[in-house]
Amino acid sequence: MTEQSPIVTPANIKAPRALPAWTYRNPELNELEYELVFRPSWQFVCHVNQVKNVGDFVTFDMLRDSILVVRGKDNELRAFMNVCRHRGAKLLDGAGHCKARMTCPYHGWSYNLRGELAGMPSEKTFPGADKKQLGLKAIDLEVIVGLVFVRVVPGGPSLKEMWADCIHLLEPYKLEEMVPLEEPWIDTWACNWKVGVDNNLENYHIPVGHPGYDRMLNNDIDEGFLNKYGVAGSRSVLRDKLSSNWSERRYQQMAPGVNETLPEDVRTSWSFFTMPPNIGIDVYGDSMDVFQFLPLTAESCTVRYPIFVRPDTSREMKVLRYLNARINRQVSAEDKTLSERVQIGLNSHGFEFGPLSSIESCIHDFHDRVRAACPVADLPEAPAQGSLRRMNEEMLVKRRVAA
Image 1 (cartoon, rainbow, N blue to C red):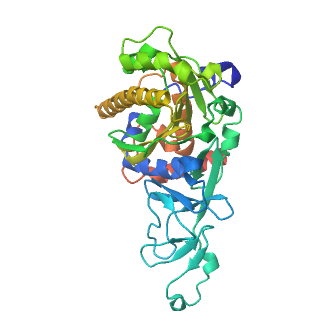
Image 2 (image 1 turned 90 degrees about the vertical axis):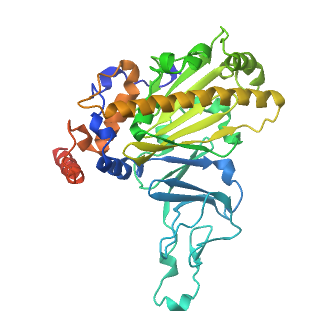
Image 3 (image 1 turned 90 degrees about the horizontal axis):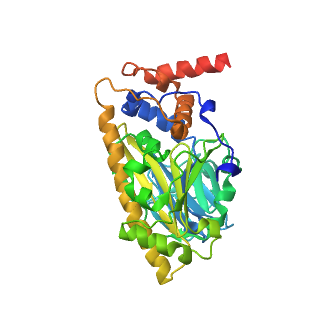
C-alpha cells in the first residue's frame, strides 16, 4: 500500500503540536466548525444499493441539517435538503419508497422525484407563488465505489479527485456489490468530535489500546499513505501466529478459505482508510464499515457505523462476519472508552497536548485543515465569550489580504 500512493512525510507537516486543548470543549468553536468544516465537506449517506429502484430514498441527519437522497424516474440519484419549502417542516424520515411524490406531513405540499414542487393544497390562496421557484433545494451528490456522499455547501475537490491516486486500493473488494448487513449502529460518545477523529487517524495506540488487534494483526503502525487531499490509509495483515483468543484465532483460521473469491493479497488483510474531516472506511475480506463522527455538543458527538457485505449467504461467510463483528464491537468499545478518557483529561486545569509522533502525521494534517477553515483554532487561549466568530472572520480577511 505504501509504495503505491504518495506519502506526506513529517517534514511536510507545519504544526509540531496538536490543536490547543480549549478547541475540544468550546461551544462557539463547535458551531463554527460545523459551518466551515462540515457543511463544505463530503458526508456519507448510504450505499447505492439502498436506493437502486425509482422512488427509493434515504435520509441523513447532521446536527442542524437533514438531507434526502432519492432515485428519480430517469434513474438518476439526487440529493436535496430534507425541508419543505412552505414552512420548513422536515419532509421525510429514515429510508423508504415513494411512488411518484414526496409529501410534506404538515400541509401536504408535494414534490416529484426531481425535487420540483408538484402540488400545493389550496393553491389559489397563494397569489403570485411561482411553483418553479419552490422546489427542494438541491445539493451536491457523488458516488464512489458504490458509496453515496453529499455536500451541503458546494465547492472544493470532487471525490474522484480526492481518491484518484488510491481508489485502486478499494477496487479488489468489490464494494459496489455490497448491501447493508443491518440497520446502522448509532451511538453518542462523551467527547468532542475531533477526539474521535484523532483516535481514528493513528495506529500508535493499537498495541496498548487494542490488544485484540495486536494479537491477530501485523498492524501498519508507522507506515501507510496520506495524499494532498487528506485521504489516508494503512493495511494490517492477519498474523501467522494464532491468537490466544478463540474468536480472533478462528477468524485467522477461516478467512483465507472463506474469502477465496477475492485476490490472494487481500484475503487476509484489513485495510483502513480515512477522509477529512470525519470519515473512516474499514474494509475486510468479509465486509466493510463506514465510521462517521458527527458533532453534537462541544463535548459530545454522534458516531454512525453502518456495515455492508457482499450478497454471500453461505454458512462459512456468516460465521466469519459474526467473528468480525464480535472482534470489532470490542474494538469500538475500547475506542469509545479511550476517547472519553481523553475528553475528561482535556478539562484538567492547564493541560496542553504534548508533541505528536511522526506516526501521528495524519493528525498533523487534520489539525492543519481545521486551522485553515477556522484560524481562530490556532490561538493558544479561547477568545472571550461571544467574540470567537468575529475574531475568526478578521483572521480570514487578513489571510486573504496577505495572499
